[in-house]
Length: 176
Image: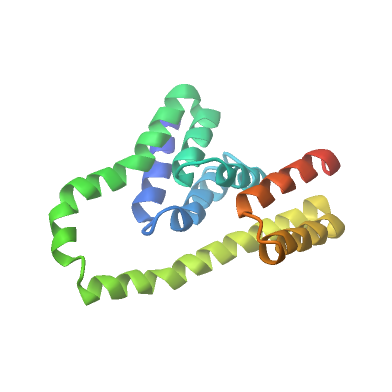
């Protein structure tokens, strides 16, 4: 039964996650943290940070890891399959229609209409991470890391992946 749950969780999140990684992350978080309770919000946030540092699509990295944690090697294979399957089927079945309507103003408007929803979902996810961090690491570390991240990315123009690595080292040294 656990393998079916893994498949359903990642298939639904990736089927409904129109727009790629940013739109699927809150959906994966809802399935993994809220619905099935395979991880805590803190664990999901840590996984999200590490998955952002590694190269490749974020949904597949998260799916593989979570699938492995929940169901071993077979769970990882099932999660990866469920992550890739909606896009693969859509590409195969809808290729003709996509090329036919790719310059359609309706398709363009639909894409633009989804962007605010994705922004809201990511904002909610960020708020949940912030609240969880506030409770677990305290206000000093949270404000310090927030200010450090802002200064490194926006003032010194350091790549976000490197800022995440710096945050991971800080957490490993001062928060473990």
